[in-house]
Length: 355
Image 1 (cartoon, rainbow, N blue to C red):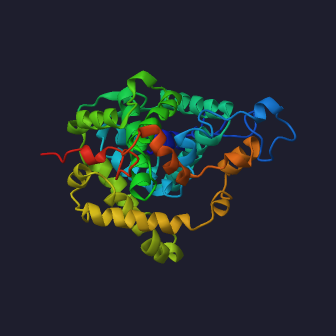
Image 2 (image 1 turned 90 degrees about the horizontal axis):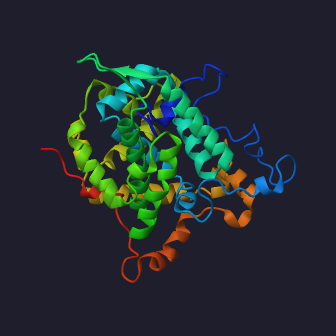
């Protein structure tokens, strides 16, 4: 799961395009005239195409936020949350070998998000078309009723989309990124672009944090921690690893996954049946993790393949380098006096625990 559909955009990417052997969620930025392989404006692309800011561009909240290293923890939180929708998670489990290719799925989701955030318009549209094409071919079966349904049902796509958008916003704000209420609303509205790419009608997708909170309140009765969610939970807590890497899994990964779980809303903890520390303690841990990860120079982090941000700044110029920390100065302009304050989440603070 992970990003835009029941099998999540990530998972859809786990399937291969039968026509070309291409990963459905790959979000390829090179080839096909999409984006230069990373060399700036010289070479193949015309000057006009090289200047293409993509679907969001440097002036967007998305451009700034998605460069933050806490996005990885936010992505794991999204997986935990998405798994609580039984029809959605069933589409993942039944259409992929989740346990054997979960790492590949995580990488492909990150690649997809990077492509639509920082790639050219053509590369982003091509990535979305690939996801939609694969989803049209996939179905899942309800083990109780025998109902067979498509994984591209709008309700399932919407659930995965909203769980992802909320997780990104929640973790980044709670870990120390200062956003005003207006900026948070703008981020949610910008995510309607990603919703369109995976096949949703943007007008039917929440466009503010209040609308996002209303959506979760409405869908809450449909959620449960079934056997498929338990399988996802078990994997995230104890992913398979080479014997030599087991100590690293215990030392590093379990702490990361645990922090992502702790950042879930209270109703998710209740459904999973595992308590979390106090909200104050979780906020402190998220802030500490954010400070630690942000000490790694951005230029070093951005060197990791597939280098979406480096390609984008080479295409558009060094002054377009994203920096989430510049958003604080814009808050007062967007919100007016007194509202440029830090929130502790997307909208999960307004979700109720079932029962």
